[in-house]
Picture 1 (spheres, rainbow, N blue to C red):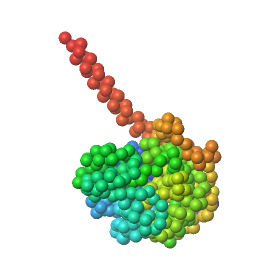
Picture 2: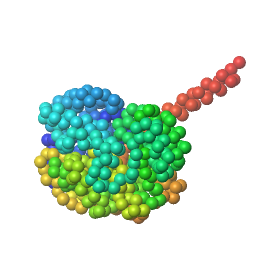
Picture 3: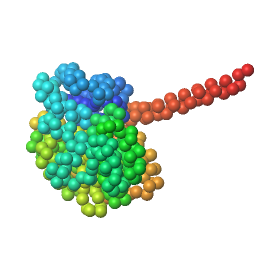
Length: 417
C-alpha cells in the first residue's frame, strides 16, 4: 500500500430508510476495512449484507423510515457515536443522511464524536432537490435540461398547451420517495392528454418537475465521482460511462465502465468550486449529441452506490480519499485505472436483456474491460453476496409458497364430499 492511513479513526456508514440491499455501503466497508480501518454501520436488521461483512466491527440495528424528526435522528447518531467511543468518519449513503449531517453539523461535531466535510448547511438539500439543482445550474452557467416546476393543476395545463413532447416527469424532491410520491421514478410522457390524466392524481400542489426529454438514441449517460476537500478542490476525481441501468435508462447503475473524460471532469470541478461544496459527490450527466453539450441531471451530495468502479493507480477511491483527508493525511496523486468495469449482479441480467431488446448501445463503452469490480461478490468477503441472494430469493419463494397453499386449499375444497 503506497499510502499510510490512521487506523485509530473508524468509519461509520450512515443510512436513513429501509433499503437493506445497498451495495454501496458494502463497498465502503470493504474499501476501508481492507486497510485495517475499523468499520461500523447503521443497518435495518442483523441479516443485511452489510451487517455480515467480515470487515464490519459492529452493526448498529436502527430501523428508520426517513419520516422521523431530525432531532430524533441526530440524537440516535450521537448515541451510536458514544457507543463507538472515539471519533469516526461519517459516510452517508443517501440524501437524507447527507442533508441531516450538513444541517446539524454543529451538534454532531460538538461532542467530538464525528469527522465529516463541512459544507454550507443548506447546500446539500438544494443539490438533492431537482428544483434547487436546476436553479444552481442556471446561476452558474452549467448546462441542464430545460424544466418546469408546476405549483398547481392550472400550471400543468398551461405547460401542456405549449410544451414540446415527450417530456419527463420526476419527483421534485429526493425525499418524496419516503412519502407518497407523485410519480414512481422517472416517467416519460408522450403527449398533453397523458400528462393531464397523470396530473389529475398529483393533488393541488404537484411535487413534480417536468423536464426536457433527451432521446436515448442521441444521448450518452456519463458519471463523475469525486471527493472535494475543504477548499472545494478535488484530490480524487473519476469519470465513466453508464452502460446499463435498472429500470432501463432511468434507474440505478447496473453496469458501467471507466472512461477518461477531461472535459467533463473540468466542467464538474468548476461547478463544485463555484458552489463551494466539500465532500464526496456522485454526478449523473447526459451528453446530448444534438448540441454537443454535457447536461447535469443529478447531483448526489454523498458517495454513489457504484463508487468502487473507480480507483486510481495509487489505490485511492473517493471513500479512501475522504478518510485520508479528514485524518490529516495527504491523498496520493494518480491517474484513474482505465477500462475497469462495474457490475451489479442482481440487476444487470434483467437490464442486459432489456437493453438487447431495445437495440441501444453506448458508443464510448470499451470493447472489453481490463478488470471487473462486482458489487456483491468478493473472494475475501462472500457472506454479503450470499445474503443478497437469500434476500432476493426469499420474497419470490414466499409468494410461490402462498400461491401453492391457496391452490391446494382450493383443490381440497373442490373434492371434499
